[in-house]
Image (cartoon, rainbow, N blue to C red; front, top):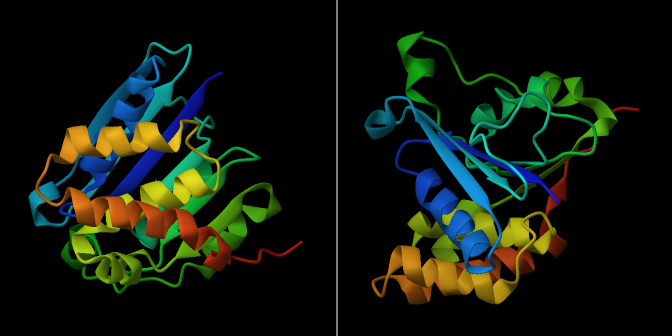
Length: 202
């Protein structure tokens, strides 16, 4: 079974680390996985995206209209990929607005995303969580990436065992900060009941 996960956000949010942790979880379970990274001005808050493909796949780039899960650290970054989402896909995003650098360069204000969300219609499930608030509760706001990993797992969107994710986090993060990240993982998993499902028009 193939699974295509695109992770998007801005530089400094831990997008690549999240991608590495999820990819490592697949490898731990003996599942073929390929991952690619695309960086904008990542050190200056530019756009960052990671493609993760697992199963019987070879190319690291997710083909157009084949995304199963769009895991977004920032709503506007999620909106950029709405036109590529197929029916039946899921969008899981943090509700924190962190304007990417290109918005300032173009002297643009943060847009109202209501229309963009409505444009994808009922075919796509869109849910948001207060990932940054939960990361702070877990002990470090930088653990937002692990919150989102846990939330994606809780939604059944990753397809690995919980222990595989735990082992992957230990491998990628190491001893420093692992306790907070394991706590954040649990917070993310537990967030499913409090997720805000964005209502879309019929």
